[in-house]
Image (cartoon, rainbow, N blue to C red):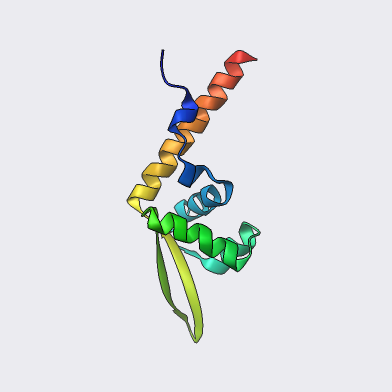
Length: 103
């Protein structure tokens, strides 16, 4: 018997806000902190904490700099982050297929 698809879910990636950060970051070269904050409807502190978890897992990199005189923070997904996201999406697809067959 094969392993249940939920076994492939990664606690770091699967958390709703972190999954949101990874999916948005995967759509662009890099994403600005303020955009993530508003898009995901998070406070700055909450978003920072989730980004730190992803950064510690080496799934994203954070770049600080300036846009003119305004300080900015950008987040980019790493190759490991893209892989982790692909594995997560595959597990979710397998769950959807399994659910569809049982109904």
